[in-house]
Length: 297
Image (cartoon, rainbow, N blue to C red; front, top):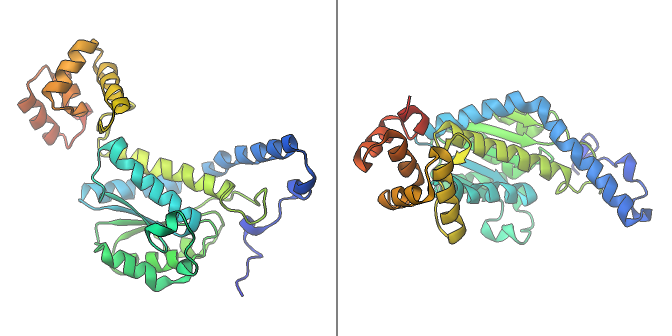
């Protein structure tokens, strides 16, 4: 039997011992108060998150991939973050990948026993043809999920970078990974339900990893999503607003440059800032490895 006694995520929260007797507003208030502690709990591990971000940037710059892997809620959060990268940052789907124990069907329905298999994780990574220049981020609120341990062990064995995100200190996955991120979120309002504070912490950390690493490889100019993909009307409007905000041109000029750049936001901005044609803008961006800022310095 697994010993859960030392895991803070499994302990009872003394503030909610009578949760079943609270009024609705009392229960909501205590949940809100507990949730407010999550961001504060992450602050002490920012140096580890920084190290992880730098490792992700390094992998991207060597044509590697970012691969999230987890089970249950943790796995779903990784899949979610990966799915948001193509529309937000214009990355190809294979650049940031989310793997969940039990495969895609496990995203909406639990696959019993999948998280307990170390060999299944190795098999999943082999199917992706994991390489040395990739980085694997293992997610497990408990920090002990066998599937995640197996993934990190295999990644280490081929020389890939590894990161662990856990919500318990001195976790098994933290001991395996090159970069352990262990945030103490404490007992849940509903004992053991790590889809609550623990999941919120993991989501906040994933936000940091993907967003700041994308900043690091030139996917952002100022605080604007300059590699945004215009796949619907809302995003087309946002693209127009981004070009205007980045260059301070009027709407008609922005529209014209977007059209000239075939809808490429970054290209439109670069043409405007450099006062150049599309050929020169493309060459300048290529020389600057996609960083708009470097093209105008």
